[in-house]
Image (cartoon, rainbow, N blue to C red; front, top):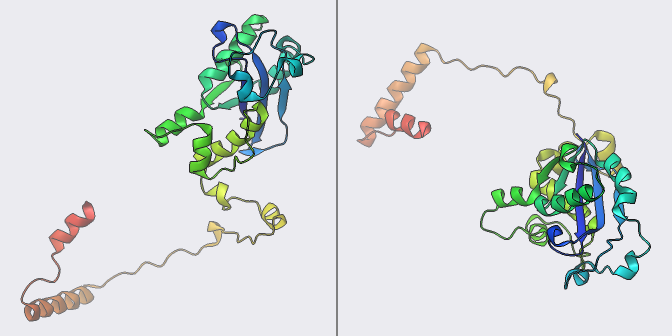
Length: 241
């Protein structure tokens, strides 16, 4: 399944109060790697910014005055996300705004075309009781966000893509799964491990006489030490635990 990391910027915090989407940023992941096929649009909202919202995004109505309205990009947007898994931080916020935009232009529901994964819910499960904002996760997971001075749809989607990979990564994300040609082009040394060429491990079998000799030696050691060196029953209990 295609994964699309998505972020929106809006004129305020609640679409129910008439706020609108002013920016959509999307980063496509194929096989969990950025493909370069991104989607980014600024939108004319036809409403004012709430107090504080403009400072967070750095956008203005003057800048957005000549940008398309959502209805002008909706077909392009739907063609881009159709059938994909959307990766969103605090998905209820972005999906609420996008569903409202879809409703306003009479295009049905977005969640009928996509599946949604909320990285905020993932982070809260993995790091309960801690701050799980995008900035906090960047710091905790070692993702560089030093260039994030303002909120931006595409910028935040790019950062979230790195955070999502870090949240869900296995060995393949830290070099174990790199194709040989790709690792070589990056200047790395590849050692290919092929389990199919391994020979069967030899089985070591102990004979009855060897077991008797071993038991006799333990008995001699016990007599010299005056107590048991190894309590077999206790050892078995420890291993079982």
